[in-house]
Length: 443
Image (cartoon, rainbow, N blue to C red; front, side, top):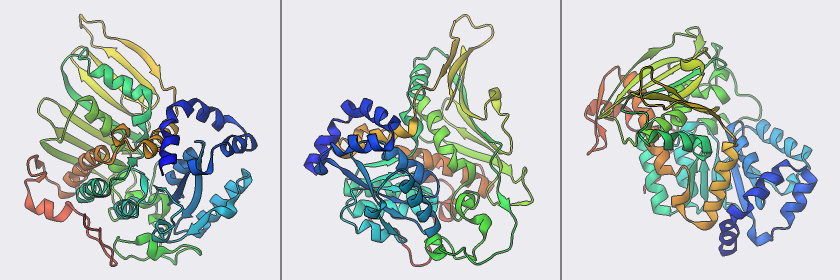
């Protein structure tokens, strides 16, 4: 492991080569990779490769010295598809071991780090087990599917002392950092409101269909894992898991952890004092979903309010953007999203704070992986762009919004006790109930 650490300590020097290598054809890239000594390789295993987990894996493989040695998925059809894709890119897949149970992958001593790209309800279990097995972890967001899970995951990282990066890749994009730096100069004046929105016109739940047998090749019992046992339904499976409380938290946790993150960072904010939420299934009442497709949440902080506004089926969001963060100050408003940022001067302001649009110039996922790999080697966990502690904080705030919606109450947060002042709400929503014999390991 010492030689691997030495290799990644030089990651900053290799960054330019990483970007170059990603642009090379597969043959040239293989030659470049083979120049790295076997002892300097980093072997990864990917757990859950149907969606973002595979995007993460392909980003990781752009980095010289990173090798995919194991794939795990409960759907053999997905595994076969990924192996076919790799074969077409002239990758020797005979050395990649495949699994249907993540625990078997964790037993593989050749795996140094794992990618967790499963549905949300699996994140805590796999991350904690991976750390206990001695693996570093790159976990998709949201880090946990409940406030209690977020807290347990932070404790696990501390106990096992492993690098844990969460896939909130906007934290690795330069224009997001630049925008936050600008907000914190104070030139916008007193910021009283932060608006965070996510309007996703292309997103829609699945149709209402009868329960059925799982598709051939799918280990549905394993897919359910710690979630309640239910008959298979195609509109709850794969991408659509997002719209059901058993497995996830809708747009609030799917996109909210990305966007609320920067609302909180820009204002240097801990947790809100109170949370209230209103919404419902207004866009697609005839489709199959439990989470709200329309939601407005108000977070109260000491000196400002933060508003979350989400809507499926609509692209025309505030400032003619389908997602973003707006810091609204006395002198001007800074608008930030994945495309870039700009400042609109307040009419009548004597301060000239208008800034033209500054576009995004980098690939956030690739840069996020470069950061993770470098920290796996250096062991300087403070250099992680999105450590589990930071991800747990914003996931907790997102969960607060969902809990306010589901309970139908205006909730007060006790910062000292780190829980709601309503004991009934804490009992019902603070921690997910685990089923089918699964339990989080004690840390």
